[in-house]
Amino acid sequence: MTAALTVVGPGLATTVQDAGRIGFQRQGVPVSGALDRLALAAANVVVGNAPGAAALEMLYQGAVLTLSGGTARIAVAGCGAMLDIIDDGGTRRIGSLESVTIGENARVKVAIAGPGIVAYLAVAGGLDLPAVMGSRSTYARARIGGLHGTRLATGDRLPLTRSTAPPTPEATLTLPPFVPPAIARVVPGPQDDYFTSDTIQDFLSTGWRATPASDRMGVRLDGPPLTHARGHDIVSDGIAPGAIQIPGDGRPIVLLADRQTTGGYPKIATVISADVPALGRLAPGMTIRFEVVTIEAAEDARRRLEAEIRQWPERLVQKPAGGIDTALLLTANLIDGMIDAHGSSADT
Image (cartoon, rainbow, N blue to C red; front, side):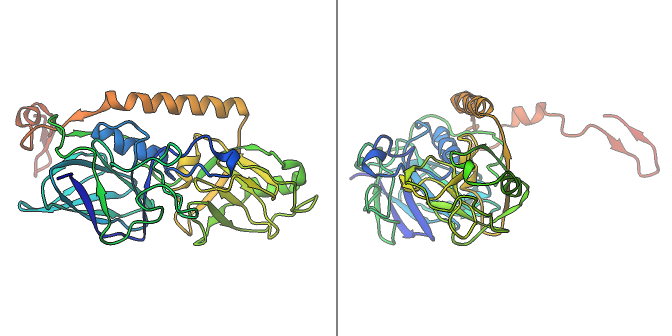
């Protein structure tokens, strides 16, 4: 029997996502893939997968799943993300970027406590699902990829490529939390000439608020409407990740994973690729500002980010088998001083 995860509760928006469907935009097929590719990569690295392997993306509310047919090693990543494992041993809470091995009939509940809205559940070996145009990512608008082309539903069964968890020790990865950003760096254009310099300054000086209308296609922002100097229609051209369209109502839309491949609204600026993943963490009501950088700075930021991701496997720390490593604990300087109740103190 093949090991599988069965969906008990799908959450609000749980889909299969990987690094994306690259190379088909000329045919009108969006890239899709993870909203936050950094959190996806981190979850995968913890369980020993390639950074872009397919995992479960959960928005706003985590899913509940059960394992059948074997054992599995899993990990979750995301700001405020946690795992509750319920099995014969009771209930265990596992933090973000910490692997855990689960057994037959174990129940896994993913919690997203915020302030972020997205979490990724990775399984060692990955999900045994067919690739569509080179990717297992779900693009729900066209019903392609993932398990059946849409969000997961109660009763869905996700087969795993492994029926037993790896024999290696559990691991943790210490990284800064994947928090929603306060500032995103941008390069101007490609249609910044459709706006006056005063309008561009208004765009950069405004704290834009994410709205509930945001989704995997893009973050819709609210604030003082921006004025078009040359109208709000252009000949449709290609859409890059992070492109910031200004439609007729003057309010920006930052285009993300499920963005359309072409668009006919002028784009005042484009978020640099190193900052795009963090935009997927924005919850409705959060505020974002934009800061202009040069193309050279954007390229350097991307190179540094890719170099950092490549180093993550080397930063994994094995968890001691059986719980607390007493020997390590006794070497730690847990107390560096004592205070006398009468006012004198002594060092230990």
